[in-house]
Image (cartoon, rainbow, N blue to C red; front, side, top):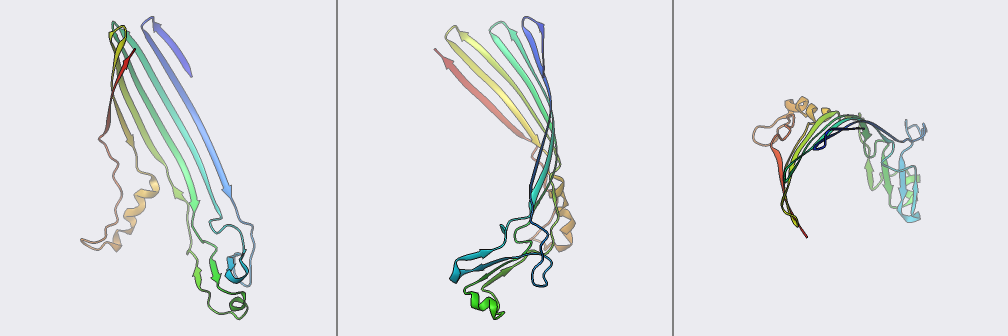
Length: 203
């Protein structure tokens, strides 16, 4: 961070930041009964579950680059504040439920006799979701001192958040479109996200 006083009525704050978060919830490299991975088995009559959490493995890598600049200018009864916050996010997330398979038997006997379980589900494949995107935030605020004991706050904020790279890939499924019923396309970011701010401080 760098704080600078240009004049007694004009100050500026500049900030550059980098943040990284890594989260891993792995599952050991186990095989079971001719299967390539260890599934989750549940036996209701024994109230027994064998296997790790059915949501594992999962993990994420997130890197955020940030530039912020805030300026304050005092002019008579007005204190004007302007600000910008820009962020570049690079992220990769992997989370596919039941990627190893989950099988529920009402009784342990059904399992031993190789009878079809009451519930059986396994996701086919899985790939990381790429959440790379750009976002921009701007604001302007005027603190107007009407009287020594009365201040009016007026402001406007604007936000733009891009579409994650992974979401843009929805258009690759356009071959499956059904006219008037189902359509795969890249989402569009909203470009008119303005938010007014009004406040009164009275002593």
